[in-house]
Image (cartoon, rainbow, N blue to C red):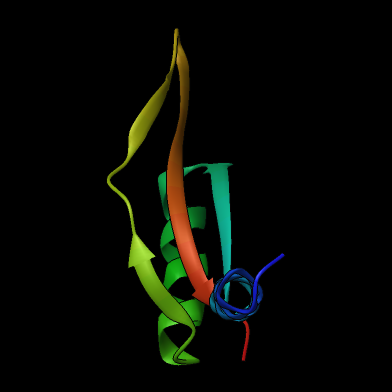
Length: 69
């Protein structure tokens, strides 16, 4: 591995280590509570739009990106 490739790999892994990406499946009220806590703590980076789970299930699925530190 060249020096350039090593530097890129190290920078990429450090960038990836800063965030946690998760999908949450829950009732809309429960998701709102989680998002409020994440936002108040300063860890919320991105909140995706809600996606219905489907069928007669009332839960939603949302994508969250949170800071690890």
